[in-house]
Length: 216
Image (cartoon, rainbow, N blue to C red):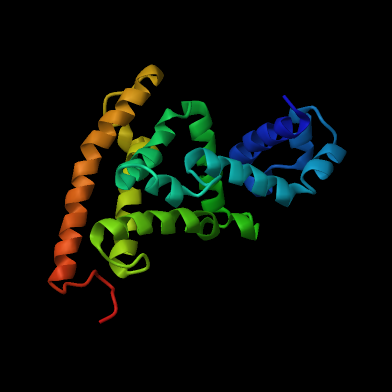
């Protein structure tokens, strides 16, 4: 493993275990087997190293390395591609997935103060990409209240089956080798229900019924 990757891997473990404020460069370089000069050379300090760890974690959970909206729209069914993409985090090995989730729990409990990894900044492009796909299904503008409200709903539906391990614990355990089939089954189950919900939004829009909290 290259030095930069070793540092990232060690930092991900330390930040997941201790949070940004509890983890130290000394702990990270000890785990990575490098010196502080290597961290400074590759990342320039703790804050930038943390940002790199969070970006990599987000890249594993979401399609943020490229342009998710373009990739979804290039498929025959953008809505299915969206749902499948958000459920695909179930295919990440459980140890890595749990570590990634702990990173974000720490950030929520005791924010690092690193501006570029604030949740609203990290999630904005993905959220707006989801809203854009849903707007096409609803027949409204990408920034309209209907698209934004349903984006929250759809993301929540998918995350409940991926990130919320407590909720999933009420279902039979899925062995790692069966996660791909489980993901396919979830897509088949959730997709028609999401389409039905979006159809209700279209009907509400046609009838002039506004979403809760929308401007009069």
